[in-house]
Image (tube, rainbow, N blue to C red; front, side, top):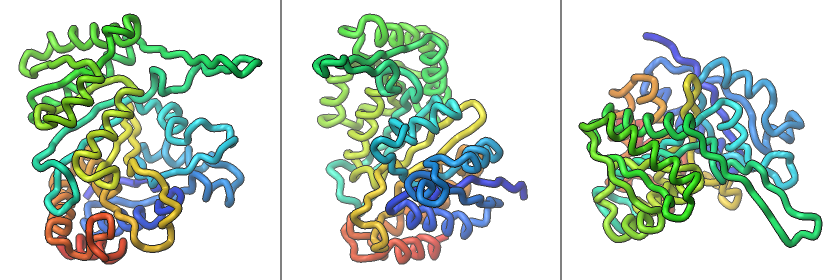
Length: 335
């Protein structure tokens, strides 16, 4: 069996607990993974004096695959966001955010299966060109969209749809108002859609998209959009299936990928053994799929879904009274 070494970043708050859960489940799957734990975030700052130590960055660069718990970016730390810093450092241009309904969760809808693919390095969210005038009354920021960046994320979306048997890609934009940046993104999407006649392309203005997601989410399959719009839409989609605790994330580049829980570090419940590890477990399944271990990924997702459906030792946010470790054990038993 081929061995894959994975860089593991436990992170902050509930991060170490849910990372331990994910590693335990991956070890129980026995699919040839080795784990190299490295610090990042506030825990790294306390221990090494640096939020992103060189050894951590070197481990990610060496292994090319990382599994990451939530990170806290302290105010006045020199970083706008540790997550953004990692995406830019390793050119992780594609943010993959799938959401799937699971029976047993507290959600408004059933049978949701939507994948949001978000450009991860450009646009307003990248934080480039921010300034405030000396008087403090005027603030500016710059949004840059390039043909290269747009092409690679839109091709990623169509390739993903084809590989996973999906039939429709919805391009979300605001080209009616943002006639430079968003219009360029839409123009390129139309060009690439013409090269993919087997996949339907739909166009939707972002405000209408948000309304449609609330009113009729089942019309969506794969969504592709720019950075800031994707950040908002992907969280909205998480709300359709029970919240951020049910939503995994993957940040994928040409040769490196980081898989993560998309929720925060939740310091209010850190150390209480009640954090729901589902987001990171689903991220681990995305990681297995990325490594070509489709059967192991499916096995993990089936075990997780069955534990949630039956309410076996589920955590309080899932309506149970179980613990992180107890819920993890319930999943491992199903493997």
